[in-house]
Image (cartoon, rainbow, N blue to C red):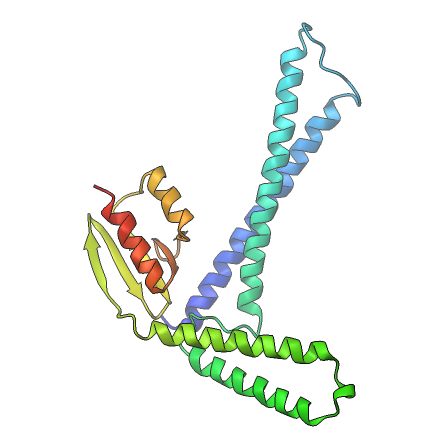
Length: 224
């Protein structure tokens, strides 16, 4: 599957998830509001009254729905950021097979921009311009260094305790394929170490680097 095709599939998936989270967030908010409006303003809980249990139950449902609405809103924003990253023409994804060349071109452009700016009189350009430009150049150089290091990681696939570990250099991911749904304890360990479930790839995965490979193997080796 070509890179752009994968990006299109990701975009479609993120848009669906963002829309679903936004819709469910609004539904939870509406439920919370509807329950709140059913209780007279300032109405205290009548201790011992037949309405006490229902009143307490409604208050709990109000809080639960509001908490759910906030959580889903944050989830919606999470996917919205992913959508914006894909659609941003200036964004260079590490997953892109042309990322090294694109970053080198970006670095060259930034350095040329800095040279031209220095040729002008200092009072014509604010100091923050050079500060931001230098920061961007350092960031691009650091990303280039990281991507160059990935070249040294071999593309491998092996199975430990029934779980397959795959280094997918094309997608820049370490992928873990479990024969069945891992226990809650393992899922917590995976999430704590940066792994996320990918419905698209049917795998737990995180960005590829030596640390990710080490952590993946350590988690799996403990599953005995």
